[in-house]
Image (cartoon, rainbow, N blue to C red; front, top):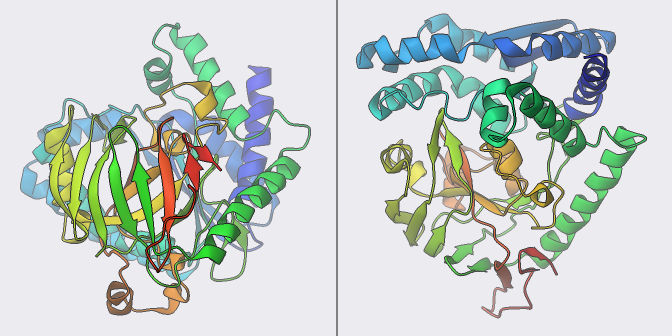
Length: 411
């Protein structure tokens, strides 16, 4: 346990110093499950050491949530539980509060909850979270998503191990994925960020008109808007403070032109969404819209996601991740998008990030829509990469250059 405490202390320091980059007199919000008290306390301590003005913790308990989801009237689920929650979120975003989200719940925590109940609840949560989502999507604030091991999640990832061993194994994987096993984790991260930034710079220089994805189960062409911007690990908030949105991260990503997406794409890893698993996804696109959607598991939930609003019928993100990434090399399915998306190329149903187009953070919603950036209340990544995936850039003269990625890896 002393080794775990040592590593958790190092992890908390990395989260505060590099991840969200806490600034003096800043408000910090931590979203955490009740089983992550130790890590949350260590992050809080480290944040105050950096001069944070206040640290606000928003706890959640999936057991209590399941009771609510199972027993509440559907109409009640669609109504935000407390009207002051939305106002509080708005006030915190106006203060430029930084947010840290710790993911640890079981990927199928709500597998027994009817899909209609989950969808109704999602509508209510979306209303409450709108101020936070808008600030996050626009990089108005620094924000960070990290993982923490729980016995329930660990048992899904390592089903052949006893609970205690599986949990320790998952913690070790999280620490290694975040480079805590290196002599100087922050230096190691700086080198990694530089590598990913170099890949993004090359893509930005080329300004491809479209990407063509080809594999055994995928043949998809995704148009890219003029002046699109590829991003990598690091970013800056509206105050100019650097931060790393996802830890770990292996992706380089941009926004598609939601009017120019055609073909068929298949998922290659399971997706954990709202506490349930969706697997074997196959989508068909025509002129930017999903015209057919099916899944081997969770088909009803997938279609409810797609029917959230008009924008959820299209894509908001395309991301490139090599098959030889450290997380992919673990040969493990994590049933957690933070990890699985960093083992595989992925795309996202729903909203685009405004910062993925030049001057996008200064554009109105109407201006963003006019250049092809998708608008939605959801943003859900799912994984499509594979060892036989080839991705080719198409120029504005409709010429294909040699693949950007071949057999799943950077060329």
